[in-house]
Amino acid sequence: MGQKRWKNRWRRLDNTAKIFPVIANENVSQVFRISVTLKEPVDPELLSRALEEILPEIRNFRVKMRRGLFWYYFEENDRIPQVKRENTYPCRFIDPHGNQRFLFRVTYYEKRINLEVFHALTDGLGAVNFLKCLIRQYLRLAAGVSEGMTQDDEKARNQEVFHVQDSYLEHGEDGKPRSYSSKPAYQLEGHYLPLGSGQVLHGYVPVSRLKTVCKQHGVSITKYLAAALIWAIWQEYLGGRSSRRAVVLNLPINLRAFFGSDTMANFFAVTMIGWLFRNPDIPFEVLLKKVSSQMDSKIDKDKLAESIAYNVSNEKKWYLRAIPLFLKVPALSLVFRLKDRAYTMTLSNIGPVHLMIGVSRRQPVKCAVCAYKDEMVITFTSVFADSRLQKQFFRKLKADGVPVRFEGNELSAAAKRDIYPRVRKVLIRRGGAEEKATRMAKQVGNTGMGAAKEIRDYVSGRRSWREELRRRLHI
Image (cartoon, rainbow, N blue to C red; front, side, top):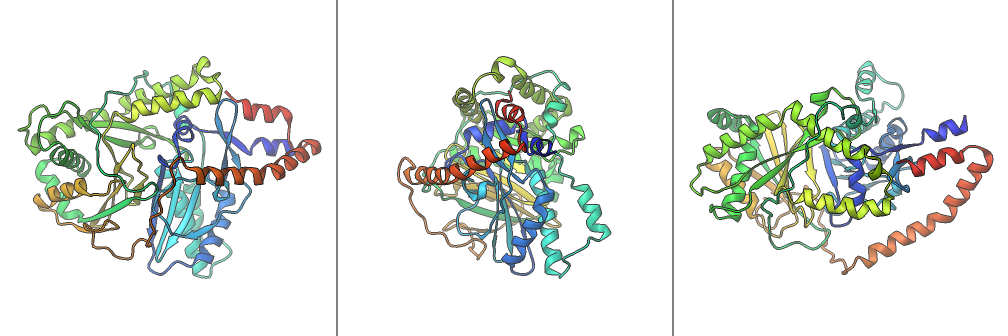
């Protein structure tokens, strides 16, 4: 019985998740944030209690990252996560040896509750469902309901079962493998903020006015925003002139809507939408039609199935699976760099949920869209010291008749309200010596206790040597 329970304490990373532990560091965090703003200030004690109560039921988030011989893998984490007041910049790197070994963090500030997630754990939809569970339990505790569940609670809970199957493998045979383009796209350049800091700018626009503009052009809101962003990059960085490299947006696509999956592991694909500006006289209306046509042809089930098949086909090649992890790491890092240069920036929209995406010097600006009722929030995260692209983008919206109001932490562009804590900028010494020493101390501090516990488990029969080899040597 003990060995069977231990066998269920670990699982493989999904097909897409395998790349994130390889490339993530202080400079490329691969962390995203979703948040909820309440009507009253957050009670940190109730929030901690709510998190502690829901976590045992959500296996997908109750894990830590371990390094095997051939791949990283997840192992059940028995520790208790800590809820902290937000005191730093959003979407910072989540050190797998810190944070009680969890791959997510929950923070609060005034009336806002933030959930930041390392992308290897799940994608946007998985994070949304986790945050919904957390907020529901928090509100129950705040209302004094500590025991029992209503029928609505049970229904919501049943709809949010956290399955963690790898849907990439399930649908890997649905299409003919087709590789992604790695042709270099135009790259944004500018003066960088200190390592670890970042700029956030929210633009609030009325959905009704935006819909009116999109209706005049005969396109959806996402198509219009994508074209406006490409247009802004062309105007601001290329001066409206012809270019040798295309301006390309990376659009994440939720695959569950196309393939009927209910997994809460990663299940998304990316599609590239862009334009090579050979003709400097192209009007915005023509660019919008080109972008709309690309999205219609690329965001298609058959095309998405080709992407899944390509990713899965590489994972299934025995000679690639048999390569030890220490050799896979530099190879996968190189592949990621080649794919990463194929787009200029990311534009993401996961629905009526406020989203921020972590940025880095290799991915300096990203944009996320959230709409609720008649208000849309367009959020730019950036490591640039200026906000020239953001201003150009919103000038385009204003020129088309869409009013915008701003919030953020940028020094001049935003009407700053107390939506983020004041953060003292600290320059980190070159080479990351302080961070490396901290991680080494944490590893050394956990080594003796962990080894003693493992020996005890083997002697008592709770753990099996055979299962342990399968866990660490899975190919």
